[in-house]
Image (cartoon, rainbow, N blue to C red):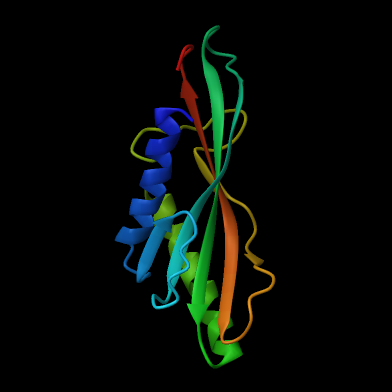
Length: 144
């Protein structure tokens, strides 16, 4: 993984921490059930393709899963709370969609974009987890 991808992953994590909506935000899974609500930022992949701008450049797309966990004894309340947290997370990530100038809009995708929100399977009441993918596009020169 390139240094650019690490910087982008850290930026996503720091942005979610800074939005103030979560008790805990970690890179990777967090099995500490004492912190609610919490978010996990999990690297899925860094896809690469040749740049059309530079012969030795590469276009990359970082794909990270953002998983949000809530705990509530009321199922409807948990559902609305987790939707609100997901919206807050997406809004926070779009404040600087260029991830401190690390990302940019390319023909392969926008600087920062999201997939649809999905309920995570196998999570039992009183817990609920949802996830969405964050995709960030960036360029790097040859040899990086």
